[in-house]
Amino acid sequence: MATPQSSRRKFVDSYITPGSAKLKTQIGDNVILRPKHNGDLPLIVKIDGIYGTQQMKNVKIRARWYYWSEDTSQGRRFFHGLRELFLSDHSEDHYMECIDGKCKVRTFDEYQELNLVMDDDFFWRFQYLHAEGKLIPESVEV
View 1 (cartoon, rainbow, N blue to C red):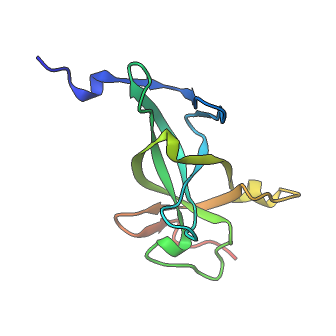
View 2 (tube, helix red, strand yellow):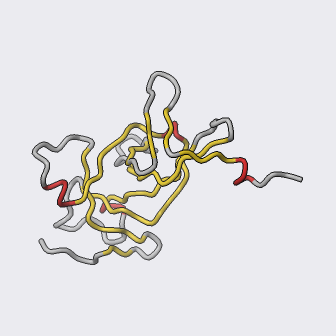
């Protein structure tokens, strides 16, 4: 009798990539995935799970996408910040090798408190329901 696919997976809370990079990622981290094409905006995701085979080969992350305003049905509006992302309900699995590095995605209030904004700093204040094309909340004070 065959073992179901899900029972052959090993789930972990964190993982250190082998080799020279030694990037440690854990559930809850925000990471940048390599874009499919040069010039594309980076794909930024929140890690909701990490799993591989029982021997921890072919390690994948379960990742919830952050959308850029340009990628939503509403598009960019005048009040969207250049480094603003929308936390979505859209999840996909990606191989660990697709990760370019970690980043920080803060709440809008935390972001406003920064004295210096680095290249890996982003913020969010909306959730995006991708199937419905809806932002929550629908508006904010500007």
